[in-house]
Image 1 (cartoon, rainbow, N blue to C red):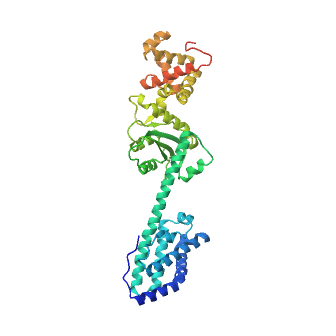
Image 2 (image 1 turned 135 degrees about the vertical axis):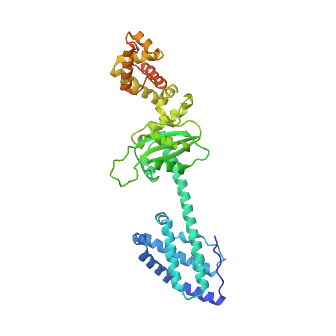
Image 3 (image 1 turned 45 degrees about the horizontal axis):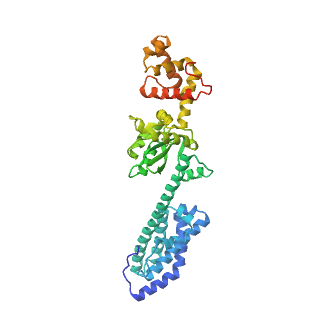
Length: 405
């Protein structure tokens, strides 16, 4: 971007002014550093090396102004020429606000020194300072864009590592570099990627719910790793509310997904265990279409029968370890009652006749089953899960024991 050309002074006046500027440029730089020291606390707190780099930037800006004043039309001024003298770590550690403060102080120093001289010089300073401010904003915008692209690639790499379970020693540092605020429990949400993914909306929604998300797109799938984040302090002494359930968080994030099924993996203790939740969510997403009335979002554990039929070993082991074996270890009588009830089409009377007991006894035993494993056999969907667990559990019996033992 080329600054507008200031009102042209006479040739003799300009030559005299230019000669004077070259003579006092070092004085300008020294006065600028002194003013920075006096007025900007962040500059005073910098290590000596960084303060020296800031001084180099100020000196480069003054020298660039003198060159431009000599011939404004010679070469378009480029902001990178001024900031190019600074090491990369300086540009990362000095914010845009601080850079604009640096420009303001430098301009004020130069203006103070040129008072009483040719008015065209003051006009040139104003024009140049405006353009260098725009140029600085452009430099920082490009840096932010590059950082955003890098963060997106890093986030995709982290999500891929979680989905594949291939962790390495660098994963924690990569997660920290992304500014992950999650702590404690984690759950993975899988759905269809929308045509226009609004990453900022997903992050804002998660923050509003005291959660954090890692976002990854794999083909047509959108994967969110959801973690709980510490709520913002309120300053109140009352007890904090219990954390929101992951299913409720998933419902709030649902508008950010495309059409189709949405599956939430089970809750795990920490981010390093997220692969197990991801496997469950991916397996559930692959078979969700087989449940005609599946809600959105759907819990992966509500799709255990479909996942098991599709060959998911995690679903089979979950059915056995969560339903079959706890019930078998608690009471064979309850196990046999449940099996008879499901085989007889969930009829209390038919089950009672088969077991030679009163229907109220069957009803009582089914209540005990629900107390032991947390599933209600009288519900259509839960009865399918329970029957799948009984079938898979009996197949897994090592000694060939039948259900009638």
